[in-house]
Length: 336
Image (cartoon, rainbow, N blue to C red):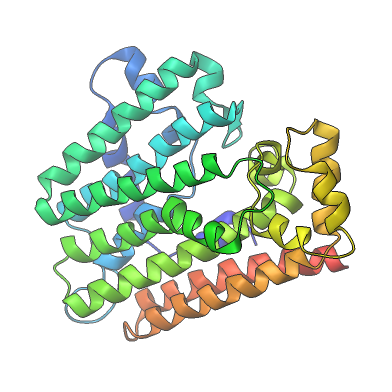
């Protein structure tokens, strides 16, 4: 399953064209250098999953639950969410000393850390400005989401190289780092469309749960996938001492746990990263991580089904199912 199939929410092409134009307009201010830096990852493409969730949520307005053209406020809400995501990538690449992102040279590798940090801050500022134009509820929601993102990042930093990190700490971190923004993407779409509070809350719950599935899948792929599949080097979390759910589960395995424990707790060479990945992959940890993802996928799909019939709720159900199926396909491929 390719990325377009995996993350497809069946957003009409015309809406995606409007989104891309609005996204570029939001960051191009006429400064040639800043415009180039700010649009670097926009031009590199991407799944646009978060703004697509905003458009999908807003499409659940009164009447048939079918796709409808997004209002200007909804488009701006989608852009504000994507700018937060892009800013986080700029900052993450500085912290990770990453050299590639989305199969292009990272901003920090091309222009340096200082430019990458300031450009990320610029994207956050533009996001906040847009959110403020949409009213106090959206502005407050985005601000609290930024707080959660920072809290999740701090939790990751504090957990670096800590072998005894608990699963509860892991789940709390990914809820803040990943699920929060997906939940907010859905909620902003619902708010800008004026949906009933019941639907607003269902969409918020859907986004939170699907975000958890997304991150567990991402952490499994960091162990299993190739650089070409990821668009960045695999094993980055292991290299940085961030021990995600598959690693935590493998540490508890009596067969590979002792050897893995001997490796971890310190910076690793490239060869040691490959060894650690192989140990995790050879344990039951991948399947056990899939079990955890299934629970969140069930929550996401149940929330989507409660939104009623029609192509939009169906596409949300399909997103949860696709994420889980892709994870389980990777698990089956490993077993074979």
